[in-house]
Length: 379
Image 1 (cartoon, rainbow, N blue to C red):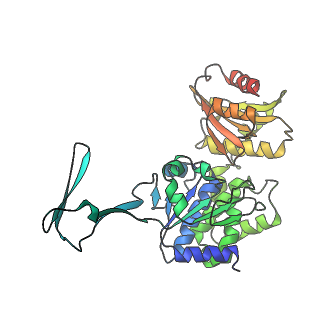
Image 2: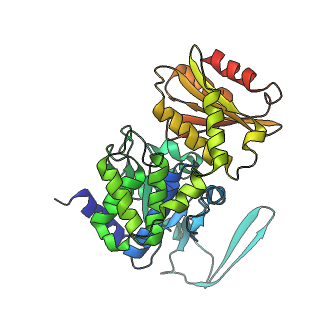
Image 3: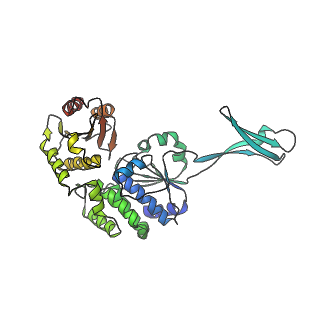
């Protein structure tokens, strides 16, 4: 019996037109892993590169400008399957076919060789999909894909799916499911699989993408999920051309005096209340940083990893302009009643299936305390 890696390799080799998906989040592990698989599959499969469904690619590139560009990106699923109008010509051939489009209608005009056309000679046939294989990364179920699944469900039911994830709640919806909860990140799992399939295809751009995902998911190798194997994986990716320092310079700014001062302010204002631990940063304190969302997410993850939260939520608030307050809140459980109310009230997007990033304008003038109390009261 073939191993899952061998089954994966066979699917890669036997299908030429792959379509890759992940959740629609700003997340270095998901984005880096998806890009890495795109380059890896193209190299492994004779330069036949897959297509990525990635509506937020331009936005993600602003957050991760050091990751390589990729050309085969789509932001909507359209024209993936043709429909064929078939005519039986055994008894009456066709002399001419033309079409016209007017008044909201498309008319196909067919001229028979003799007499009139018998409608029984016509049939409508669905052609093959433009794609022949789907690969999903870090996607627990189809609902994680949002509207793209709802609008194109036949695509997911008729094509074979490779499902790659580290989430224990994954629903194993693929024809091939590689679900491993031990790795620290999707990037670490992806590296292990790629090494078994074709280590030579882990070129510089693949290594950089995977190292980015690994570094972000583990808070620069400080997360409790980090194992000796995680360090070995990071070392391997650096040997293959991944630039650790470039990633740190953009994502962490750990050598910056300004970022250290900001971290100090965050710790200085940290307060513990009945059901929440929270802190905040003012507009003038974050305005000079190029990517405040990225840096503050690192601070937030670091707090989450180091603090003993118990049943309390962790909340970080900051301003990006005079009219807007942004925030992160941990830990969010979609199945919990109070957390559902938080999601409904704050909207935003959930990262790593555990914390919510949101933006508010209606409470901006009332300030951090008012917004904190509003969240606290819901909890």
